Image 1 (cartoon, rainbow, N blue to C red):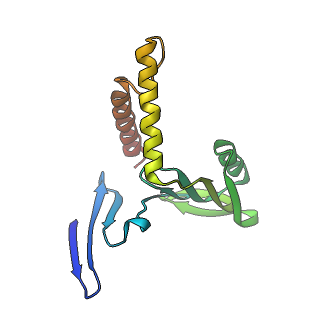
Image 2: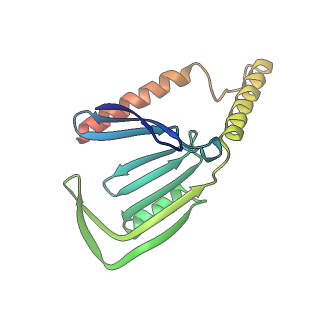
Image 3: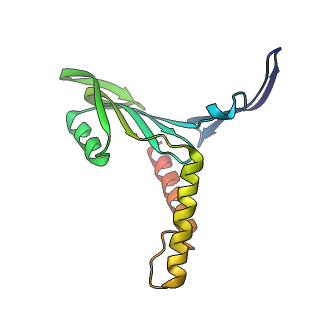
Length: 174
């Protein structure tokens, strides 16, 4: 389903676009883009929902991550190790393991947590930093060809291969 919407009201004109995609026949994905706020309020969010929780990524180049999850204490420790600078808040805890189902598979957990990591930065400063770092890296390589660049001609191929692998894994689990 693809929908473009324009609503006129007396105080403002609201423009937005919305699309709902069904990925591989079983995974709904919703995209929404609204153009109704002043630039000072401009922000982006990506929300991903999983069997055990959800992730919200902030900004076009994500610089903050918020995760809500149902997990075991061991899994919570693994999250802390994976995101050492994060703050993990236990929202609920149980003395006995809780049992539920996600995607029709059994889930066991004894914690409901919120993990928060990263700092919101203005997108222009993030873009400037990324472009500056890329140019410095390329200039370093031009001066010294033994320098290993962070971005080179192989990146596009590797990114595509990672996307194909992710697609293949998603189809296997479906």
